[in-house]
Picture (cartoon, rainbow, N blue to C red):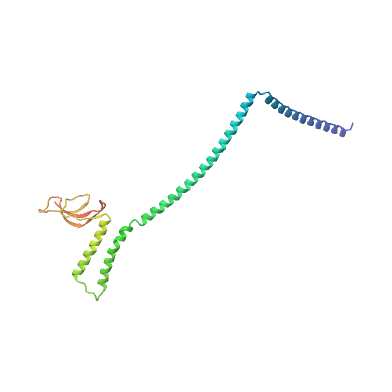
Length: 213
């Protein structure tokens, strides 16, 4: 026998062995299926019922799991929507706050416009050489302007402090000097250099005063 014939024979043997192995594997698989079928066939009715109930429970649990996943997805969408609404609300609040800061003095500014109008009228008269203005008219115009401005301050919670004759209060008054005054009790304010101002009861500027020793 030649070497080529020997090699051919060996190859045929190997192929036969592989075929045998494959057949054995197929037989094992068939036997496994048959064994499962035999096991199921050997189960009684109660055991089969238990298996069916278990299968139903598994399917029910799977449905519950699917429903839970769907609810979680819905909750995620709700959270994202609420977060977006929160951001929009924050932007609106910030915009409103900025507008409030910009226009917080709108009321008092509008109230002060007539005061400016009064000053404008007075200046127009002064610049008009053909118009003769008496001292009395100037005084009256100044007093009217002062009344208008005082009313504006009062309407906006500002109180003018002119404490002549009152007892010195360091919370509202600033003593510029102390002088002997036999006509006044000690710590009585005898003169006011500069009036003070309160805004809704809080000192904006203390009155500068002279106090009796």
